[in-house]
Image 1 (tube, chains in turn blue, brown):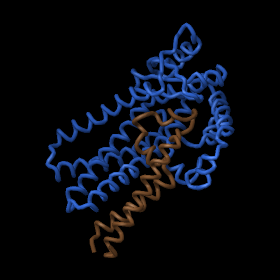
Image 2 (tube, chains in turn orange, purple):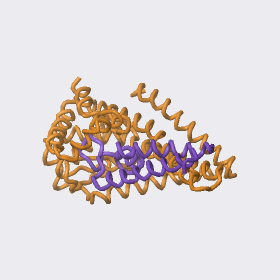
Image 3 (cartoon, chains in turn cyan, purple):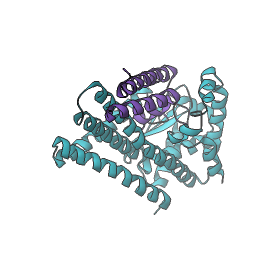
Image 4 (cartoon, rainbow over the protein chains, first blue to last red):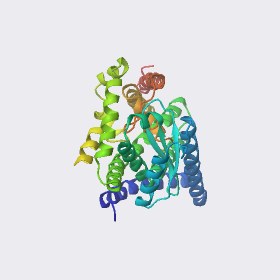
Length: 274
Length: 79
């Protein structure tokens, strides 16, 4: 077992998500008379469509293009070696102009895509780029993208069922419509809190896997440090000050931590260096 | 006293306040898993929705608070 603590956390969060999904399924079957097979097929289709549309939309929205091997032979070579090390197929590599240094992975093990921004390749050195690529490959290897899609799918299904349950048990007056909408949103956010919590932990796991694959955490730590330092300088705008002044959703504070998919960068750097 | 109306009022005001104070929360709750979370921001961080989206969410939040207060007043027979 590669990550016993991740398995334990996934068991807890997975059981909770399954429990809320089961309640939603029972409500759908009991209140609306939907047969079990339709609930199951509908759920799989719902999540499948979200997965397909999400991948397509993510690549399209940043205008990602294939990373030419003749222009970036070193990156292709690094990814090939890292993929072999991590026991996954080499993903499709793409490049995009995102306006900021960034990289992300979409897809699943065997059909993954890693997108890097031109800005990231310009700002980081070869070792740091390798650290970032290793982290993204770890996301594909650990099926993190699929887990997030599943989490979102369950949250959405439960939220829709809750909304309809409120609607169909009320008097159909204005207050009932309002209550249904609000309950749907509250339920969605509540379920997503668990998804966010596991997402933050999976980031640490991906960091640890990346460090293992490239023989140390320093390159990725250095990449995160370089990018976050640039980010700090750029964030000295009036809008950010306004947001931070609320002292509740500013970077790394209060609610921000609960609703963040990523742990604080400084904590990741600290763990990578230790 | 209609408890469903009062529940609508309480949840509406609560959700509305959350949307005003933390518009990122609702955006993230709907986008995580649908699009990669870090796609819009810098590497290693969560993306922050642009100012127009945040403003829109806050306007919706104000609407929810107003509607919640209206239903609250109705539930207590003040209107």
